[in-house]
Length: 124
Image 1 (cartoon, helix red, strand yellow):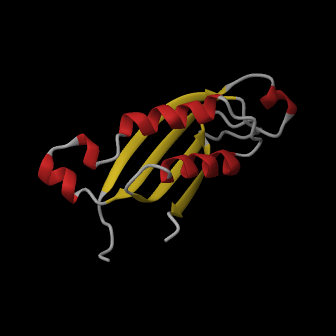
Image 2 (cartoon, rainbow, N blue to C red; image 1 turned 135 degrees about the horizontal axis):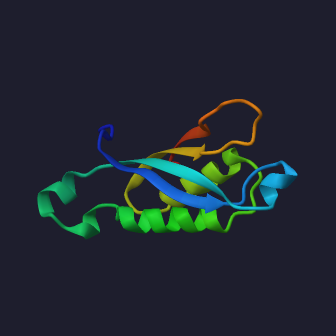
């Protein structure tokens, strides 16, 4: 099988979520940014112009946002893992790179954001 070099990119998906270990983080939702790089073969969709032969990025975005809004996870690492698992369930997806960014991390330093980045592949 040839290696996949095609990608569908979803960048800057903004959601609010209750996530964090500290007590005050559990009291109110905070903004997150999600960037998703979906590894998929786009040859058939490129030839046919048929949505059913690709991954519908709108559907992916809605499911990822729902996971974020309804999470009870403490760690970004866990939430990012669950997001990756959601994307890998879509037909044709071979791998996914998820970057999950906390836009206002609760630390006493001047930090713009903190993030985790996961790369996961479908089991073959």
